[in-house]
Image (cartoon, rainbow, N blue to C red; front, side):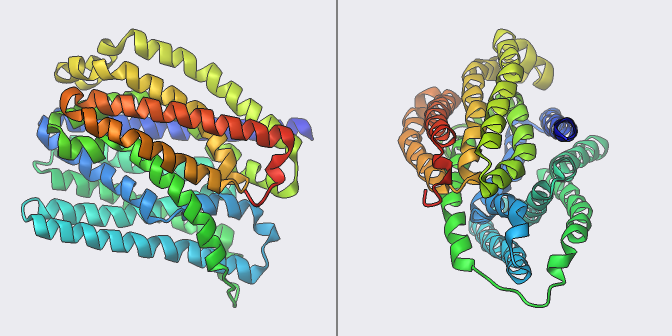
Length: 423
């Protein structure tokens, strides 16, 4: 029985790893294609157009994405009518808020005048993104992480990479529309699978809602996701308005390479999150401890050799991927970004432990406090240091967050404090 459990977990890890790696590969491929097709300034506009919606939905979905991942594995505890109510609200609340953000984006485009068509594309892409990631969270929570990641993260980037390379669009807006079409294909793949596995809930006649309680839990997750998203997208928030466009392109190229370091913890989160949530719900503290130790060990074993390789050969890697125009400027950033991503990678399983075990208050307050602390650092030094200022701020933030979440996490699984539902 134990051997079968381990084999099932191993197969899930391998399938999810392939999905995450393919998604990251095609995200880098898309950046490479765009870098070589557009000018540096046009490429900065393209990066902004496809990354700003990611920032928008992390805030616009109001914390419901993590709530889906946490609550759905506990669905056996839900009365049928309450489960249907949760499914409806988990779609209605984030989509309504995202629609409001899309309207604001359209208004910004109208006010700016120039670039208005690009803002229309960004608004439409934001709505698509929201639905794509809601469906992905359902598939992750249902135990289909590989399918969810392939559809939500691999397909759109692969489709955009191929079509931009083939058709060579002359306008950034056209390239963004091609990326959006890939997201529409993702929705077409995910939606039927989600419905098939949850049709009993959809077909329930009555629905019961605990919207206030759900929204309160999601709200603390939103605090954390808001802070985390700001830290992840400091380049968009700070470099776009306060630095030359080239600085954004240089930072983003180095960030894409450094982002490879987060592949392993992302795979682990996709696979382990439902099990951590379920173990907490059933009071299986021993399983929680095993899961946390295993995740930390796997991250260290896989992460540190890759980090050393990136630090030793920064210019060669950047030059090979993005060309000589990016080599010198981006490789200088890579060492800081690697350190930042290593700290982020080690913090991920512990921050996820907070979310999956009713520790959303700790998750939210920690991210907001650290964001408030480091944001002025980046703003103060961006004029003199450019993209280096953002990399420094991210390094400080991720180091602090690792220290906070690891401290609280170890205390919770060792002392049994994980049972404290009031946290």
